[in-house]
Image 1 (tube, rainbow, N blue to C red):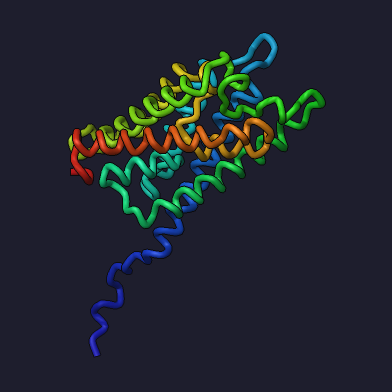
Image 2 (image 1 turned 120 degrees about the vertical axis):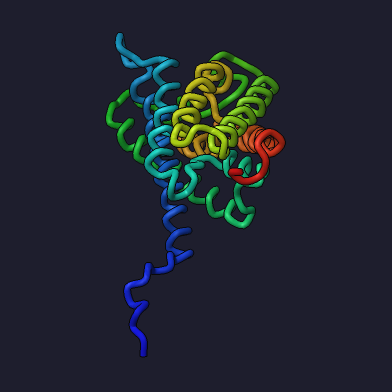
Length: 248
């Protein structure tokens, strides 16, 4: 009996690979919510030294940049249901994997918000019902913007975000720079739209903090699923036209 293949390279376990991908999505979305929403809740308004809108915008971009470099090779680094749907629409991601990714992202986001809640309540003045970095329109918009304004900005910015993702990860794009482009794009998106609705472009991020804030923030959450998912699919279809399906 031949033993020449004893030291052959083992075949990767598809279940293990998929499990690692889901864990990577959970951790990446955990980091996005803890880093992005955490900067808004803990650091944005700190007396005299607060990081403000620019700091929060950078924080969201940096979570995606660092998360994509660290975890992107395991899962693609979506960390966002709108991105998963967008990459499906672009022909880059199988439909069968979308539900699992979305569930992992929502769970990761909730865990991130949970850690943030435990830290934030460490001061007596903290009131989770005051918003907790939740998205909102009308009375819950930072600048008092309407539902229509919020829906338009979310659809458009999520679509552009997914176009940037599909372009930066296409075969003809410079290798290794995609997380940089994607992270800076998310920073720019926040610089534009925090005054409108506190910037979602990510239903998992919106859900995570709205669950804790409750009340009207939870009541308005539908908009921050509908608009980003619509924008993500639109961006994916545009990406497919521009760059083709797949990475080639």
